[in-house]
Image (cartoon, rainbow, N blue to C red):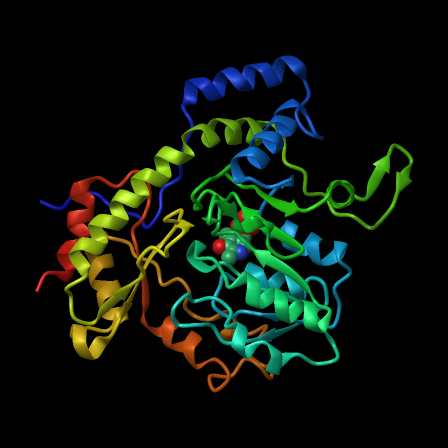
Length: 369
Ligand SMILES: *Cc1c(COP(=O)(O)O)cnc(C)c1O
């Protein structure tokens, strides 16, 4: 008998008692923010875990995007994907930059490198791709284009925590990468985020920028923002980092159960693991061919919702369809046929560390013939 709600995601929570012990330490120290002990510790541990040289913590995953554009002095036009969460494009808008949408590749859902060059104009200064669902972009092809035209590359890697290609982190691609540690993500600090960079100089500059531009007590070197992570969330993050591998392993098991059962269902497609890639199983998107499956995506979505099984239409609508962006010349259906097709047929199934086998069976019941 079905009972209880199955949500699309569920936050990875640290052990409450261990967290309380760390809170006691913070209380005793009275150092609650501004590059405190736990902040420094988490930066070190994350750089280590993620196999990146430098990382700077932020209060969320949107401000590092906005700050990266500031730090690299990006202006004019930036080429980006419409198939993402709105924050990607909003970060451009907050910097007075015009987004230029380029279509995505149906195999990866990521920016299609073969379509980037046609969208470059004299005003183009950067490319902002997204590793959608944590699936790695074709970083080499993107870098070749960027080098040829003298463009910067900022990766929105909000989905790509811990993703590696041939044993190397994909967070090292491009000029900078940004992460989100929001409650809904594979790894969370409640709200939180980070920026990954290649050198100490840039790390220093980013640390100034996230603290109003202060280089020392009396020197402000740039019009910075305030986006510092506090000690409570850094402590929470330290604890969650210790269990994130177990959470990813649990997600992998869920993905395997989904794949084993859905492989033979007519009209349903999904992604398999890519060879040489360490995936994080952050999402489980399926794509529904209504003609073959016998139901549209929205019918299935509603049917599941009525039974308290919550899927998410990630990413529908496309960013380019929102009122802020739909008037842009690149925001048309003709320019973005693949993105539209994905957005119209995608449904992300419940995917998190806490799904039981019974929960997964309950989801899969909607696909029985
Ligand atoms: C979650 C997310 C963000 C924003 O991160 P927040 O921490 O919620 O600000 C940005 N881009 C993508 C692709 C995301 O999924």
